[in-house]
Length: 407
Image (cartoon, rainbow, N blue to C red; front, side, top):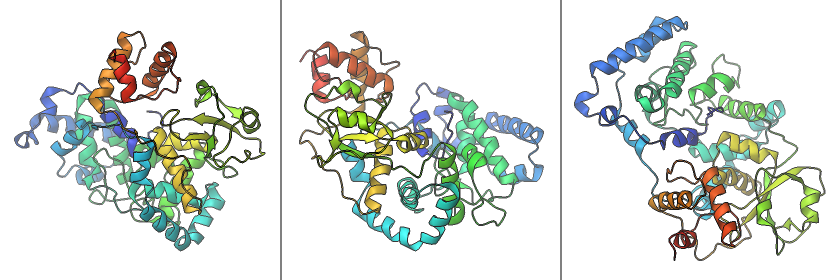
């Protein structure tokens, strides 16, 4: 993916690919030091030397490197259920996280204000990302980044992607920002408190306190500066917020609810869109899009340019909404006004696979069925909904699957 970002979900998206090499996927404890891997690692070493990475760095990095079966297990693990916006918010925008985030905003105000002044990213958003990624630094992962990425680079499924990440990780070590033993992260190689992939680190990590190192594991000035540098580089605008919950008028054309459709706030106002409490939309010249994360029965949002920046960090719609809503709660705003539907039930992954196959058989292409609801699946759902006279909101439900079955 082009962003190669610190968003851990980037690797999750890659990890959901299927068709692993049977020989490697079935690695056992007795095979973890096989000659094939060591030969491959020797080739990586030679290429790293040719890239200018020091021999002593490679000696330290590869001292005990071997495939990690647990990484492959996690890589192949599929989520059993999709998650509605309600379930996502229940998990990530908790009262404990809100309370703690507010305390940390006060505690680190001077530092956050300094970072804001330099990079133009509001403190509440930096703290929201921090809370979402690692619960404010509590959970940064316990895998050796070198071992984890080497394991995934040796696996043929996405070897090119992770091989590049491995060289980036070695570059970080060679520049002296962290030691191999301290370079820990997720099973997919996402590192530190903001969960940067190594390539994002080499492109955007910042030395926030001027000590000559970029330490996103333990140094908060570096953590905040690095996150803000990344966001500012992808177009963050601190004169705007992320978006807001809105109320749609009766008869609203749900086909207008699409991130591809942008209108000035005044145009949405003219179409009858209002704030969730019924008040007029702000009288400012900002383009926005309407999104319906759980279809016509769920909440509606008018989202702006910063929302798109959040989705560059992590392409999951629910993640982006959670960051925005958490940032609002940190500022003292209330929660959603839309009430949770009583029949809010996510589809099981097997049901999504069935839905995709049935849609494709009916002439609505979903791409390769993978059990994940991505843009192609949502477009196919919209097309089918239109064909049978349902509101084309693109949201797959048990009722929709039942209809596809002929129920």
